[in-house]
Image 1: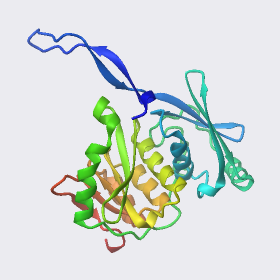
Image 2: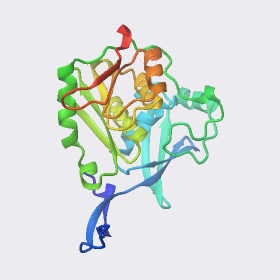
Image 3: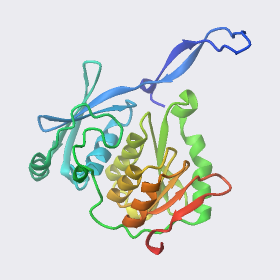
Length: 265
């Protein structure tokens, strides 16, 4: 766990019968704004856990439609900025021209999925159907069994989400944590991009609420399946059916619910 992602704050447990414990230090998750800048132009301010920020920038840039792949990002410079962080992203000339042509105003955007969007056609969306297939039960069980022990920031603070990239047989290859559920998924996708991992060779696993944006991000990345510890929304199921992403949710160590079987649904 990065030492910058949690800090000790003193808190005192009190009970409703009037008794109190002695004050003690509690690990609290650090949350900082990160200003993402393409070229010389600020694009979005996101609230994030200040770790794995290059992974976040790569994943965010892909799922926002700014780039089509890792090779369109030439460099990322992370630096302190006032009370937050600046991420200056150098795009290839073609990617920068494309981005400036479609740039939209996202002033005040935070880690929610649609803040700053002015119309429905501005919502980032997958360009093609994935035609995925649900992982088998043993793979899901294996991934779920490992995930709880792979979240040191959550174990310390109880305030963060996690996303993982798992191989087809359920081995957990990458785990990223963040105060924002979208950010955790973007960090994991970004880590996969930077490691040149094929999106067809595994599945994504998230601990957070499974909303349609999580399905959309999975499809933009090209993942054949998304597994969630939490329940899906109706629109998440609808989008998974449309995009061909296999969707498994309410995943526990002994069972899960298959809502969409990808191409076979």
